[in-house]
Image 1: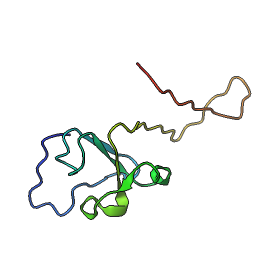
Image 2: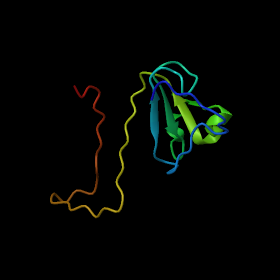
Image 3: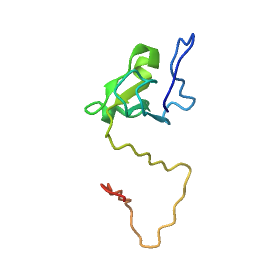
Image 4: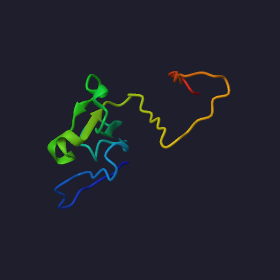
Length: 101
């Protein structure tokens, strides 16, 4: 997002699904933070506490993180799946890819 102006807004964000949401503020106008800051839905993301900071109360306080520009944000979700495993493995491994270019 960029070029955001709020008019008579008592809440700057509403996460319709509280554990799903990432906004990147390209120019700082939406979050009133540094350009490139991410606003991230906070539900079940306490692991971000060392990297991101609690958003201001207008952003729902406990509902939103502000993560600095340059933070690598990714979402991985598996819902209602019954995976088939042809290799008799009981584990799933997720590897962080540092550079996907």
